Length: 325
Image 1 (cartoon, rainbow, N blue to C red):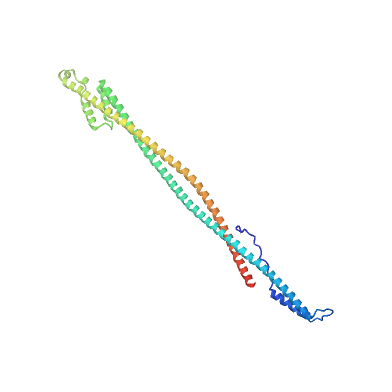
Image 2: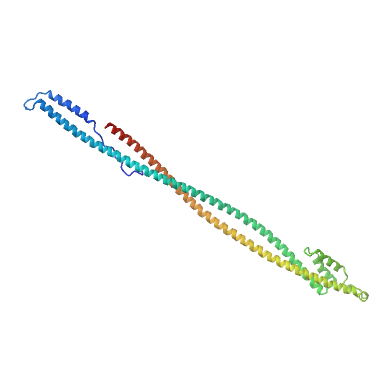
């Protein structure tokens, strides 16, 4: 037994009953009385008395020796019971401590498992969030590029039309520049109608000399409308320039917000993976410690059962010998 602290010494041997031994010797003494007594002054009665005294003394001595042996046996019984009872109690205490440790490890393992599963769910969710945010960001970037391109084309067309009108180019050049502006889908419908009206007016250089002489108001009207169109185009240019600026500003803010989200998701994921790795190692170590305790507990239970069996057998033996004595 791993709990045994004393050697299992065999019980002292006990002699047969003293009374039976004395009876046998008394019979032998009586037989001796039948023999003739020759050459001695000791009478048969005296001899019998002497034999009886010797037998008595010997019986007393043997009884005392047997009492001593029984006392040693009884002491041995007491020692064995005490030692084994202490070992069994110590074994029970050890088993209880191991059981408590096993239960504590089981609870800790369950908590670690719950935390690992929680972190793994977080990691999976953050991965989905990362993909969703990236998809949204890609769509936003695509929309920005398309809108920015439209604004850029619109501003270029407006700049070209303003320059052509201010240079007082030919009607063909003006028409080409203004038609380019008119065909842009970002230009408001009201502005397109004004451009259409202007394009339908004859240019000054296309009027005959007599018309210029007699119809100066028409020529003046054309010049007046040309100035109005330039003002309208310049206002559109300012509006689209402001919109392009606001679009670029919004794009910068959106891009920055996306980068912050990505950084946060990345940090969260890395931290969670690190914690999962750490807690997985801790769980493995705790599982091994729990398994070791379970092995020690099984051995302790086996040793205690062996000690209990020995104690029961020894108690039965001691009770039987005590009854015989």
